[in-house]
Length: 100
Image (tube, rainbow, N blue to C red; front, side, top):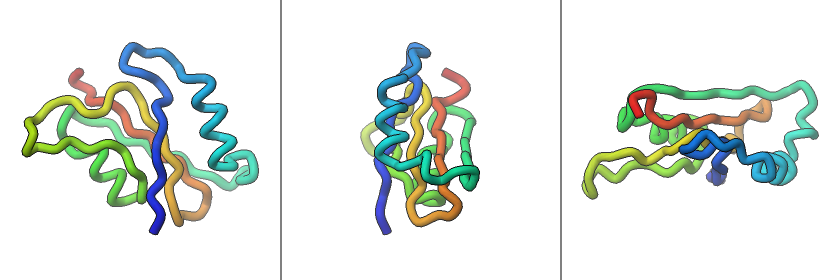
């Protein structure tokens, strides 16, 4: 099973990554999916396992917190990734903790 690397869509300061999104859409061949696509997103408290859940469920590769090295914010802003081996074409969105 292939793991897809995500990209930061919006940084921790709220800046939208227009060029990164264009590159992501080209690399994932999103346009070829036509109207057959899905988008899933997860929001919740910081350090509640959002990235881990997305990685396990949708075969993405979002950065995860390593609790052995201390607890703290891992995801900043909004990250997106193409879900591997899932039809229809699916994009996952991982948000920073809502308590940040």
